Length: 308
Image 1: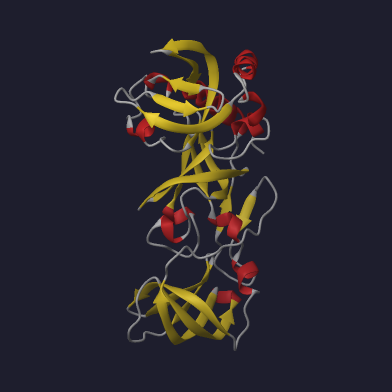
Image 2: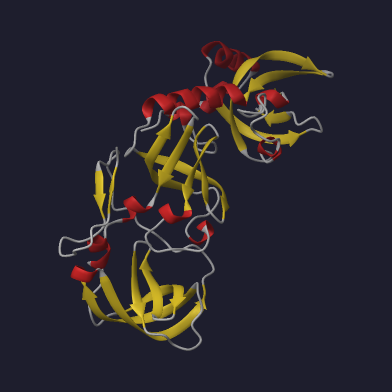
């Protein structure tokens, strides 16, 4: 479990409001070096950030706006995209800016402290909460804490394959993820998601032969149509006219074959194109995984992930 102080940006923290009430309480936050968060309202032409603290304005100089800006390893887009979003920071002091008194803040320092904590704490197999920040074709980027970014590759999001992470996630949503790798030398983390969505057996037990259920067409091959029943379970239906990828369908379950990890389907109705991510359920509630076996005991094909 990640410490409360190092939660992803945008996550509510119970202690914050007491420190934002007045300049005196902000002084106390400065003395105690508490990590706070508030909404960024402006990025000026010099890429300095302004934060609404309630009792006064906070000012973050460009080089303190994000980890890596000072060294040149992070581009300024990491700063300008913070406007109108909650960001973490520590109070460094107070200064006169123009004709007003402002609080001098550092987001970089909050991120550095979080990064050191994560490098010391996280191990492969640990389950963490992460907040989706943005998505690309190849994966979903997440905030592990204080704006420290990691990624879930698209092939690690679910067993059922998707064409883009936005078929599974929404920006701003909090998801659970399992740590695959901790690269301490390069200060990077690699995450996975599909291990938390259940095994073949756990997903298949929600269905019975003879049922007609809803699904989503995820791929069309020359030998059949793969229909997602759950994010970690898909079945194969015969080719049919008017089939389109990422479209809702009604399917009849013809057979469930654990030894082959196969579900045979028949498409009975063609629905609308998907308009939002498919819902998913987490099957794993502990905070540490040692080994995950997707394949059922009857199957001769072993699909597993060992965390080490």
